[in-house]
Length: 216
Image (tube, rainbow, N blue to C red; front, side):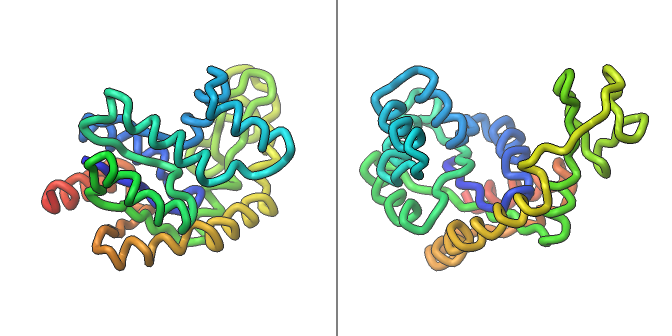
């Protein structure tokens, strides 16, 4: 079961990846986690990535692809994977197929989570965090008992800069320009499966598992 999750920020990819990993009994592989592990452990690829990051440059696709190839070759991913955050652009998508073929593997499907723009913005801008204890809330989906204050320590909650409307809008624009073209790319290969990302978490996971399992 070798799946890629596609969807804009706020579409619930990370949440679904964890649920699906449990259902299919394969690892949830996040490119963010791969980067952090390589940087933390000081691997050759990690040090290579760090040089670009220290200079304020994007890590080249070939370095990212090498990290993903290394991760997919590890024992726990031999039986399959749920990949979240890769490929991130069309060039990575085009290189990913040969990467898998060289390893004697192929994608089962690409799961595309479709969510309306207004819902994405509500999800992404509504987060509030406690600057003292780190507890996290959402003004609509997980509000504190007392508006604007932490349930744990009563500290006034704040909105992180990454969750501001301006930053969220930029993140969505980057997705539209860089990652969204992968939808047509995978659709042309007959691999794309679209799902309503606004469904409740369990209902969405049920729909994905049912369709993917039938696809076989």
